Image (cartoon, rainbow, N blue to C red):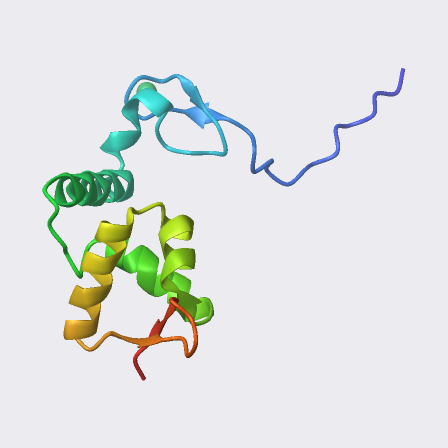
Length: 127
Ligand SMILES: [Zn+2]
């Protein structure tokens, strides 16, 4: 009887591997399962940045180097934007977005100008 040999395949990128911490299988060849994802230095850093952003926000503190400011700058890299649009895209209150924009403008990172004949303010990255 002739047996067909299995065809060698490229590793499936979705194949699971074992979590380095507990051995549970993980998705997408990630080194840690969901319960242990913070053992990954990258995930840890992202989580800490996020936590700091939440604290800044809760304290009404503006951190021009934090995640919220980064979100604003990334949005403005695509195109100039109105204040209202930024507010809804990033999910900030009017006061919050104004505080961030004022701080970013003071640092010279963005420019803000009233749209002629309108209440809107247009924001763009400083050259
Ligand atoms: Zn685990």
